[in-house]
Image 1 (spheres, one colour):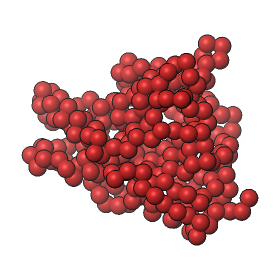
Image 2 (tube, one colour):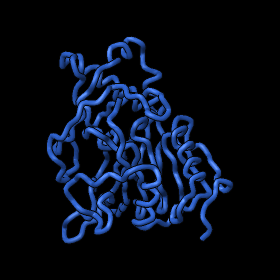
Image 3 (spheres, one colour):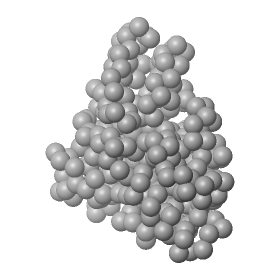
Length: 279
């Protein structure tokens, strides 16, 4: 195949709040510097990018990830690839009674990937191979808009504060062998290192408390922030098709998963890109 070029790229918005579909790029082939920069610009502007009808093996997906930073090694204690320690399978498919992938079943609250770690993922690249006929959608929320529309008294209260983000095995339906209690303190409001914009960096799945506030006040503010950032006006809901590739910016967006039938197969391949310590 002919390599993609910047002249081939077309873009359309996925929703008023977040997301853009990019057409004219074949990720199975290497991308040149101009195409890479164009994709970065679209990504930074839209937070989530979609490329449909892709045909990716592990090598091509990791190569694409490498164009934008260092792929992060899977931290779940499981190995999903003999060649690439950064590859994770997200799947409910079971062989001999064991799930072949991580995060197998059901819905999942809004979160940002690896926010319980000192250096969370800056990007996640998810490739769809098998999808259920209904459900298993991924919802994305714009953290910039969530912050920019906060009431002034809430902004003042959280300005300069940190929040504890913790992975707790029993806090959700997931059952992978993550280190129980792995946690990190990060700013409630983080500044994107490229765009300079501020975004709300807490989430319902893993944020536990706000530093320096009484528990009752911390809980009340977090409940307000969770409800605020999950407003439909900030959200794009993606219905997957096989061959879809989504890359999202964990520094300024949140994502969630809707429920789906355990009787239907869902198989995704994920690679994350290591980020910087939030500031």
